[in-house]
Image (cartoon, rainbow, N blue to C red):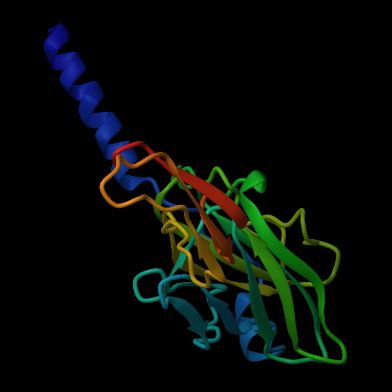
Amino acid sequence: MKKVLLFIFAAFLIAQKSSAQYCTPGFSSPGSACFSYAIDISNFTIVGELGTSITDNTGCGGSGWEDNSSFQSVTLYPGNTYTVSVTTGFSGNVDNAQLWIDFNNDLIFQSSETVGGVNAIGGSSSTATFVVTIPAGAAIGTTKMRLLLDYNDGSGIYPGMDPCASGYSYGDAHDYTAVIAIPPPAVITAPTSLAFGGVTTGTSSFPQTFTVTGSSLVPTAGTFTVTAPANF
């Protein structure tokens, strides 16, 4: 009997996990936001690493949420910053935007997972830029990223916006895929000098000191020294 109960409980947990998903933004008037007032994400751009980028001009469909994660992905490195651009449908509106990355893959966009945002898009221009910061300790792997835009009526203000848009009236949200990857090691790209000692023909070698100066050096930029052992 206990085995049967354990099996049922395990099956229940598996079913719960498989059915779990991210919250769907609950704007109360997404159709009006899209078709009447042009409160939508008409363009979102971020340039990442390894030649990856997102240029999303899919606009809105009237539901208040577009899941673009299956075909729009960007690779990002921990500790790096990226400048993103958000364009709304109409500069006469004033909107706020916030961006999250689900670093721990728990299907929840936590406030601590906010990576950037901006208030008051609109007025003189329908495009705004802001800086996205990837924490140095971000977990390596593939996860979801959500951009949410809300009409600036006091309901959602960066950095305290709700990724589920609870209580929001007019807005739009788009989901993407973010790949957090390990950056490659830096290399010496521009050595300006290389100096080393010498050995006398027919004698044993002695410790040699090599000094390289230039840019993008590892372990550090500037000058470092490598010592070769005797008889090397």
